[in-house]
Length: 169
Image (cartoon, rainbow, N blue to C red; front, top):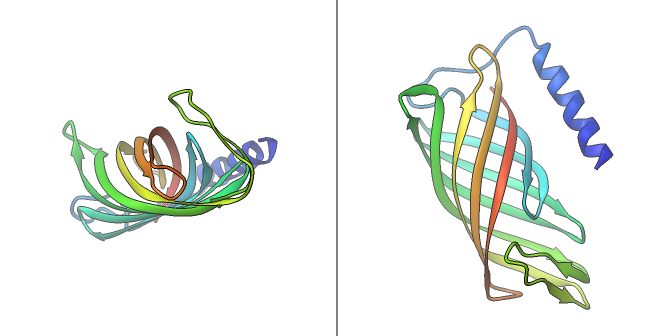
């Protein structure tokens, strides 16, 4: 946890002292690509978001958890929220794949699953959230909910919150 906080602090400091914003105004988005950190209910990791056109983006997350790693891919629709150009509402769907070793899989509903050996994680994901690009800076902040159905080691359903910090260009 200390390493994540250190990396986050250094990243924020670097981004805030950046002299020039690389954010672009192109139609319905403020940028083409973003790279950042994603903190979620199950995994914390690295994310990348790429706009294919002004309202459609692809997002990938490489997430790390206590006993494993998960790769998630999402197809997202984006639109302006509440008449604020820097604030975007997004929603979409995708899938995840990963692995987890033995341990306790903590669910938000309080029913924890215990696994005695490693297993595959495979399922479908959804996302709904808000993203704010700080004006005249390349910094973006997002908050979202991520419903998912775990199929390989389930089936069961989860709902996890997410918080993102991104550098846009």
